[in-house]
Length: 290
Ligand code: PRT
Ligand code: ZN
Image (cartoon, rainbow, N blue to C red; front, side, top):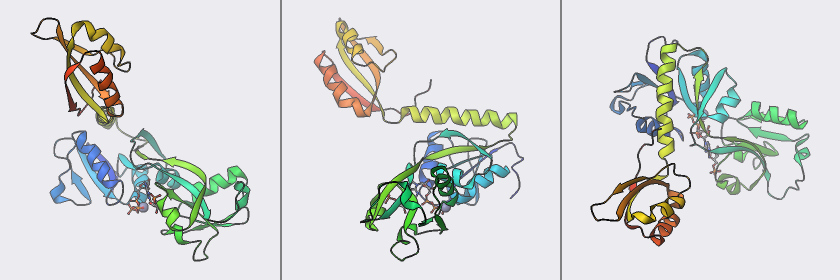
């Protein structure tokens, strides 16, 4: 495929796998709807100057570096491992995981020195090599494409360096995580050379992503309360710039509207009730645009 010289932004996303669904969801929450019915390697968005290029995650950094795609959504781990000249322009907050060293349960482990002279299986040789160099460890790195976690059990390696999320896979394979080397999450990457026209569209996409991210976990809360309680109620909501207050027809009563993070919702509601709030409505909040 050639460099994308058209005036549409081409976004590379994972075709199948862990990042695919959330990438599509993020784009649609940002108002970029992909024509799902004709899902091919290259799909159009039906209401925005964007094309979607479906690739294996391993190929996304290179596609963006070459300008085949202008931007891409991929794990930070792949960006670091492939080391192509791309810039990370935004962290997306999903696909969180870490790259860790793990050894068979029962091994005595005191420090990273344990790895000297050992064989370590991984799909991320470049990141591991860099880490061992920093730690002044000399070890044998065995690059394998998949099922890294079974390498010690079959005698292919003494330890593994792999992606860990819940840690369940390590436990299932009798392995213990000993060093966390890198944190990862999905990131938005961009090619270094991009036209001013495309920069404008990318800025627009980032603005929309920002609005989507802000609204995550937020609820919109409406309540009635005595106007004299408004000030006290406002002090219970320190994160809020300025709650919206509207007078009610019933004299001395006001309506207050405010965005509250879901994690604090019940605590806040209880304190608001304690200062006199009634008829509390909690609505989902779709976008927060600043
Ligand atoms: O086909 P393609 O090459 O596109 O996909 P892939 O198979 O290479 O990648 P995929 O879909 O498995 O993962 C894509 C990206 O998701 C990774 O590059 C990471 O950035 C991110 N990610 C987040 C993960 C995980 N969490 C994860 N848990 N990638 C892989 N895993 C695997 C891990 O390899 C291990 O086998 O899940 C297992 C560990 O999970 P826990 O929860 O048991 O610890
Ligand atoms: Zn892959």
